[in-house]
Image 1 (cartoon, rainbow, N blue to C red):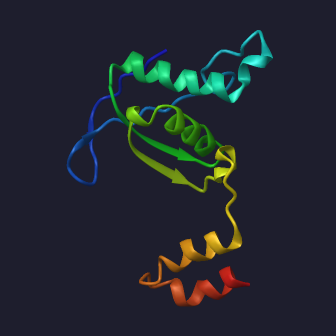
Image 2 (cartoon, helix red, strand yellow; image 1 turned 180 degrees about the horizontal axis):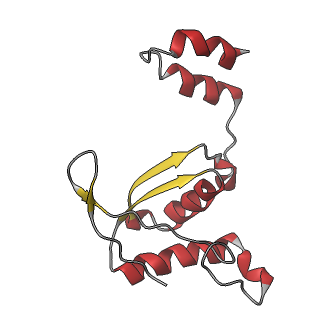
Length: 126
């Protein structure tokens, strides 16, 4: 099922559409009769089918947590279809990449200019 949502201006003033995908068996999506279709490769196909149904060549993808793993797999399989990829608290283990303590500290240190950094960074180091 494809949803066409009204365009709403984003922070940039540029019109944006936000499409929320209910994965198989979640939200308004039907529960598959075959539970083996919950595999990640099939879910990646679902994202591609939604993109095609919406009639867009390239899309921005925003994903959070477990959805980030699916978004990384989709972007790895179809990089030509992803204009921008924003991952929120996603761990790249699905791409055989582990987030190490050094990676986490480097990510935190990249926010040195933030007013909260000096107070919170010691907790990250600990």
